[in-house]
Picture 1 (cartoon, one colour):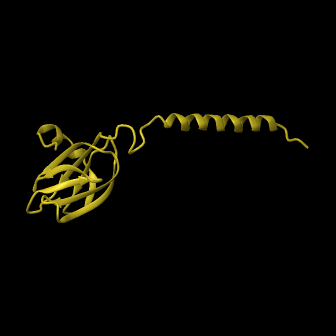
Picture 2 (spheres, one colour):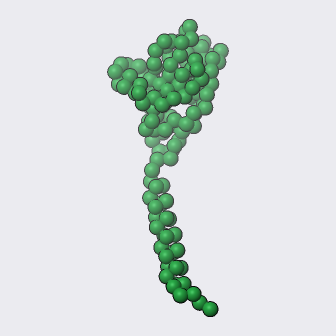
Picture 3 (cartoon, one colour):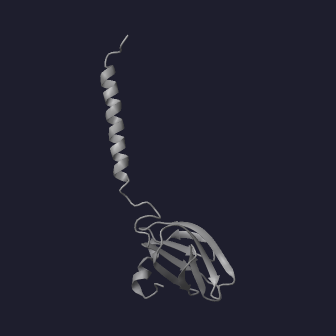
Length: 133
């Protein structure tokens, strides 16, 4: 025996499926981390070691972070990064971390405390001085 409204129910399910498919496909136009504009990340580094540290992301040297200040690395690759802080002679690894760097959200790596925090509050430092390595 056929239930009343069976066709309407099937049509509603098909319409819902279609709308969900369109909504999901529409979201695919957004940038996926690690793809697209891969060099639009901003990484700020802070440390209080006794000497400058060389900052390396996925085997790419970003530059030198001076002790006691924030160093801004703009145009950093986005996506999953393994970042390392090494003494400038490259021999001694001080700290390493894995982070997900999005293209539109600066991150602050506090080397001393081994923390990755939002860098939005300090983002203005990147624009103030010539701290970009």
